[in-house]
Length: 272
Image (cartoon, rainbow, N blue to C red; front, side, top):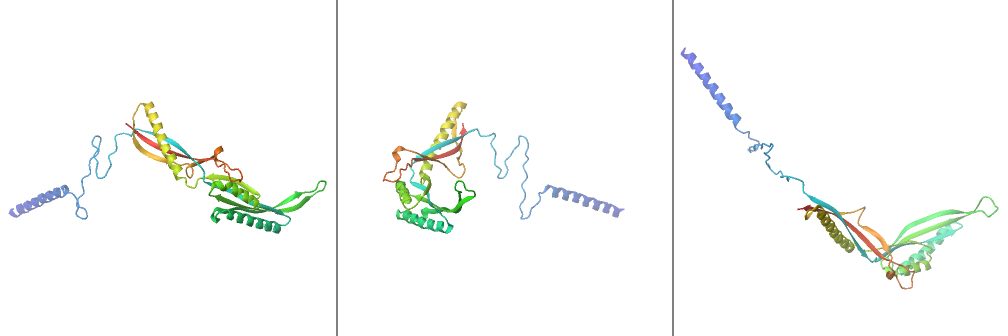
């Protein structure tokens, strides 16, 4: 009897010890590799939003703003000209047409270089050989004789616009019988772009202030500003002819006019 009581007491003590050990293990947090203990996750619910870690606190509502597009324009006098000049020859044989064209084109290139045009400013843009059938004499059937044509064109950059008329005259005297595509530009447009950009910002601010006044609000600081680029860059308008900009020097009468640069910016202003 005594042995049986001893056994029952021992079993009861073991069960109590096991229950106590289990409760202690469940209450203790798990230990991760490296010895650090995980932090408890915050309870997030309605009315109990707590920032945790590096989470950003979002504003309570959208930012009130006005977005406008401003434009600006700047004008400048062209200081560089581009023109296509060339020689077209005709002969009864293709060999003769090619030879004639080579000789005349050599004279034309020599004349251009004599005027101070650098090699880098002379570029071949077209070289073509084609045939042409002349109509048959009146009253006779069939086709007339065949003629061969050779056309050689170069693009010339004239970096002193005041000399363009003289360049064209000398080119014709050297044998050029095909001249077209006279265009003007500004070698360095950075100043014109900066001026147009400044005007576009001022225009954007004026537009935003007008809208704010109409809406009965006060304009705040700039939030976002970006340059509006259509295509590959700023818009350059064709030169405007100006009577006072004619070139003298006894050459062909040339009017370079003015070159306009347009810039646009999009600006977002805050509303106070």
